[in-house]
Length: 394
Ligand code: PMP
Image (tube, rainbow, N blue to C red):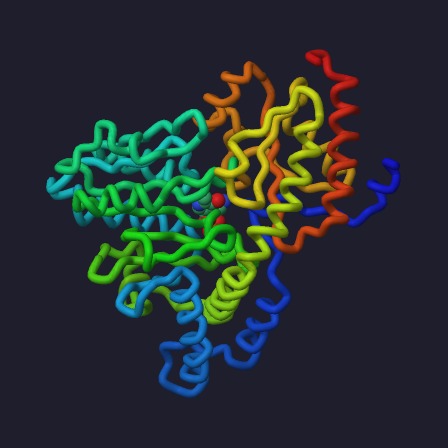
């Protein structure tokens, strides 16, 4: 049985870290390397011939998140850049000169928010990091508790968590802030392509996304700004993006990101039903292993994510064993050097369960097949059996 698993092609279950480029996206980018390689700001045809496809791509991005024509979607290099732009921009425009003093966020944010907040705190910003409830979620009640609208310049709460897949009630949080005249930002990197994102329906002021999490290219992202809201740019220079983000636009990546967004939104039905069905099947098989903990209620999570911990098994040893069996999973965020144990949500949940081992994340995509799930289940069972048989703590 095992040798079958060993001989299979590798199985990628780390889609919250990054996703494979959709082949249609790759194809859409092709003309812009060797033929239409002009700078869109140039006045000659090399430049102007990029405009129609750029405009289609922008339309796709606006439509994909439900932005209106008056809103702005600024194309940038990654969601880390988008998050930095919002937090540092709000600091510069609303805090630095004494108008307000506070940014409210959470303990479960991605490092691109968390570390930026650390830096801002060192500049004198009062940073409040809300702890999630027992379900790992930041509710409106948690936000309301101790909220001071006179001091707060911005609330920044992620839409879906990259480790657990847990979804925060962004609509309630955004409405709460809008009702009090406080700006609201959400890091929607793990939400786009997994749950509907419709900004017509959500009073969000800033939203960040990243193409490589929805089968677009790495190194392309977007920042939504609600109409009429200005922020000091992070990058000064040329007049690209209306002066809001200087730097020559990466045409192939923008074209690819636009198509990737459209395809991801088209595939939402599939994500909600088929990806979820495969995820649930994998999750049921993992949960059937004795002394295993799955983090967060299924109904509160994105359809593709499972975070599990196996008593007596150290996360990295488990990943290494799984990798040898051809299955790629993850412990902690690929962008973070910290282990999952450092995450406040998980720490709270783990101590509740009285378990002392690291967690492993399995994240699927629309390209994950049923056959891959079958093989992954065998590999996970085999890895757990082997590691527990040699564990001194199990
Ligand atoms: N926020 C979240 C929730 C993420 O998962 C990631 C990527 N791991 C980022 C932000 C950063 O995205 P990027 O790689 O585009 O900088």
